[in-house]
Amino acid sequence: MNWNWDYFWESVPLLLEGLLVTLELTVLGSAVAYVLGLVFALVRRARIPVLSQLMYLFIEVVRSTPLLIQVFIVFYLLWPALGITPSAFVTGVIALGIHYATYTSEVYRAGIEAVPKGQWEAARALSLPRGRVWTGIILPQAVPRVVPALGNYMISMFKETPLLISIGVLDVLNRAKGQGAETFQVIEPYTLAGILFLLISYPSSILVRRLERRVGQL
Image (cartoon, rainbow, N blue to C red; front, side, top):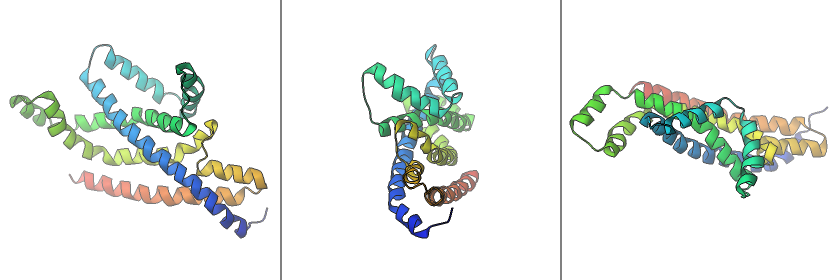
């Protein structure tokens, strides 16, 4: 099969549309994962009877099963059971967010445990309200330490969005697949999709490494 530069450049607008969908999924899914992950971490640390154990079980189940299976379950079983019909895009954001929240919860937990014990003891000595201890002392110290790890999970999520083709989400790779299926020329669109992933992932990885070095100096 011969390389066709004209076909390559003709594919650019279509795949850029897919890249926008991929970026939207990644940003929104990461926002869900960061917020839910913190909630999961705080619930587990609160050691509330039954609730903390159920949260631990839920996290282990999600982490131990493939994201693709979870997408299928949410889209084809959970929504019909609840009688609602969110779009495939919304389903993708929710599935990605919940899946990665189970990982970011461990990141938050490690960051919280890294806060020096003296900070907890000082807060108790001052008899500060529990909410004030978390929002004014613990989380402002814990969150900056985990930002690089959260960035790594965002990059991983970006590269896993093609799994959402199972429910009809047309991200950049899935648009390349569709383009190739229509013209029976797959090399150009798949190569372009790979270049677009590289152009986003590689600079992001460099940024995360710089953040890791900066955090290491804190």
